[in-house]
Image (cartoon, rainbow, N blue to C red; front, side, top):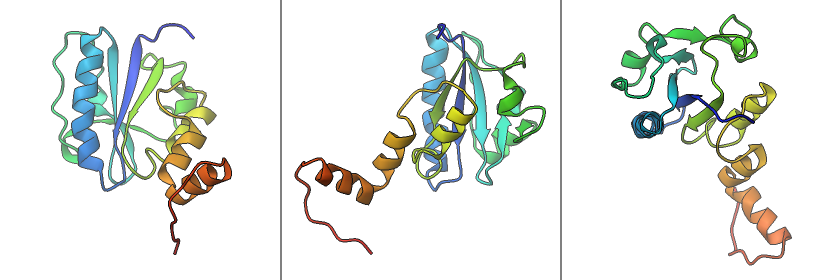
Length: 160
């Protein structure tokens, strides 16, 4: 893979940790920008809608937008809809296509393997754990069963 120049930062999301993700994304985008990357902010609303953050691309040295969640980020943003002209499937031919995705999502549908699976189907390179590692990391029962089956000591646990 070539050295990425434009990095899409996914943030927000449908989980209860939405606001934490928005705050985390600010730090990640600043660090990427300071390292010389073009940043493409992609906001995922609490309703699950994906939007380019106001249609902005952040080049190195540009001022970072204030990320304020659904009201600020989604207003005026260009929707990214599955199967539409702005979908991941058509992004590779778009001027705004990213070379790499940096997910900054917390909780369900961000850290549980679902997003990672979507990115793999779309053939988009991303940072972080893959589908299985993410899924097992979020599912504590599956994690304990896997560790136990591997012969590692696991404290007793109960399931409901």
